[in-house]
Amino acid sequence: MEFKLPELTYQKNALEPVISAETIGYHHEKHHLAYVNNLNNLIKGTPFESMTLEEIILNSDGGVFNNAAQVWNHTFYFNSFKKGGIAGPKGALADAIDAEWGSFDKFKADFNNAALTLFGSGWAWLVKDAVGKLSVIKEGNAGTPLTKGLTPILTFDVWEHAYYLDYQNRRADYLAALWEIIDWETVSARY
Image (cartoon, rainbow, N blue to C red; front, side, top):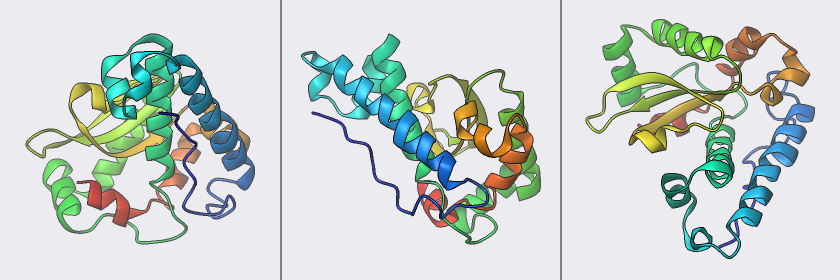
């Protein structure tokens, strides 16, 4: 199977000023595309060629894993946003966040702290376990909660290519701004 770069569900400039069209251009059309192309080249003629992306992630290591996980992580990340929208989750996810952290603001602080304290490049994740308990984890490089049997709900990409054009080295400003563009309908449905 040959993997394709997933199309965005919004225009490149739709997330401005939080994420610029220029950043989307580099991040999605160059970095994300490079992971897709690298993965396709690495799996050609191997047993991975007939697997789903998730199967490749769970059964590979090294370059194949890194590129497959980055394709998956980036697709998940880009599908978490939309222009405007509600200020936070509703329904079951909102209730679960309140039960675990006491408030949405405490959850946001914990999530931002995970993203801020991740040394180097990687991802901050809101995940649930098999019984529905929420937690915040951080994964370096191409790490993904799929390998731990966790269900991803939300992620923030903290590789510098995700924010450097818009925020330079101000990771905290980037993280604070991302909360304005989360598609809470999509994210809440993942719970």
